[in-house]
Length: 150
Ligand SMILES: NC(=O)c1ccc[n+]([C@@H]2O[C@H](COP(=O)([O-])OP(=O)(O)OC[C@H]3O[C@@H](n4cnc5c(N)ncnc54)[C@H](O)[C@@H]3O)[C@@H](O)[C@H]2O)c1
Image 1 (cartoon, rainbow, N blue to C red):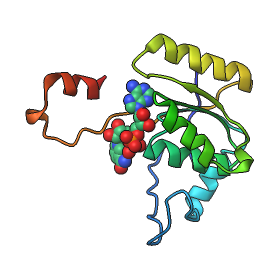
Image 2: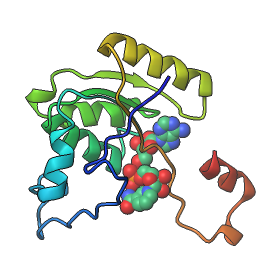
Image 3: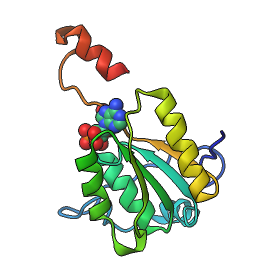
Image 4: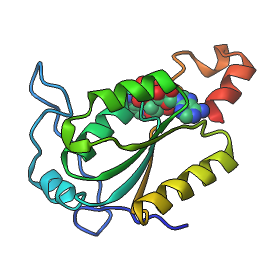
């Protein structure tokens, strides 16, 4: 299954995101000109997101929901996923969602296909699932390091 990447200018540049003014959350801050062009393309896109219950995933889900995307939200934590869905505005409706562990390749495949079948296609996959281990690699237990990599 192929997913198309959305790129603001179609030339693969990296666009820096301006930090929000103090006291404003990243998802609430207004877009700059380039971001406005990128995000304008998001409307109607069918986007599958992992790690949607986490900090970055929730923020990404909120930005895409605000721009009219059709979202497929997943996370290994049912509680965190539920909190993200509850935090989205009414314009997001009730998004497609699944509890999903990204280390289970066949479950990921089934979830992506399931979302694409219900949404009528797939435009973008965003992987925001991950583990942030705040420690020096040399100090880490090998099992923990393996968990981060996997
Ligand atoms: N926050 C940052 O500034 C930043 C910067 C660079 C890279 N990252 C990396 O991006 C990833 C996400 O960052 P974050 O700040 O949103 O972290 P976070 O801990 O807030 O969220 C991570 C989410 O991923 C989920 N998750 C963990 N393991 C999973 C698995 N096996 N399957 C499915 N979901 C799983 C967690 O339940 C959680 O909801 C991390 O790997 C982090 O190291 C974060």
